[in-house]
Image (tube, rainbow, N blue to C red; front, top):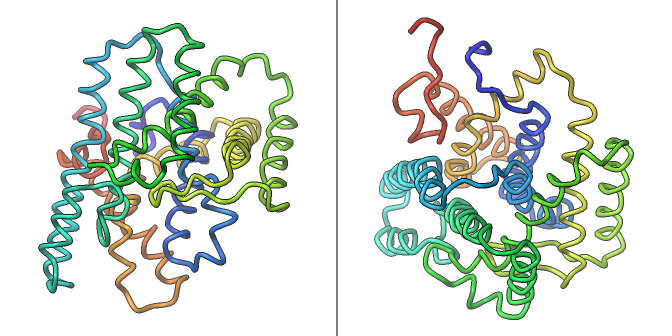
Length: 316
């Protein structure tokens, strides 16, 4: 299977693996254990990666169609799977929970708690593409204004259908990633810069200056400082990973394991119903959806389950 992998950065895929593991850990362990160290960056890094990997100049209609396929199909498929599981395991009050799940965003409760991330990423990416038509400083100003709106009116913005209001908070992270993309070639010592960035962001958290984020709940942390901390940690992870990762089998394995990570994000809430230890929940929540996604990669259902194209055996 490693021979049929798409041409992707193993370093970036390693960051994705670490971030999704952090998301699952944030749901399976107590908030006292995970909030400060994981919530600050584990979702923000995906929006920063979207900006970092951005392809400029794509038509807006193409952006909408591509995102609708890569994000929309897994969203719909996982919603159906989660709904079936809800009706079997927790049928009492299921209709209300399904209705809340349809509303999406913060309205959605167990087992639909991660759907907001997919819809927020879709709307934010589409808006970022639309802003390409404007002068870059104007786009940055709009993103900063959105971040300010997120701090001032986080509750009403987080209670919008499908979480479209999360765009106010998330757009600035795409600009952070895009800015890193633009200056990446100028960074001569990425390992050192990455380590300093990672350490600086962590220091803001340790000192208590930057409160952790919970974007889904409309908690954008400490104005400015939480944004700086989450961005610094995310940038540090990217630069360190790119500095230490080398082409080879490990890089390819990281890419293979990263392909079905959207499956893990969307389906791992099902294990939260299990009355087992947090470590078992974490192992099952990460491992079982990952195995489902890996198995799906070779089937026609891959675009619906993983958001990725089907991996085909050479010659088939």
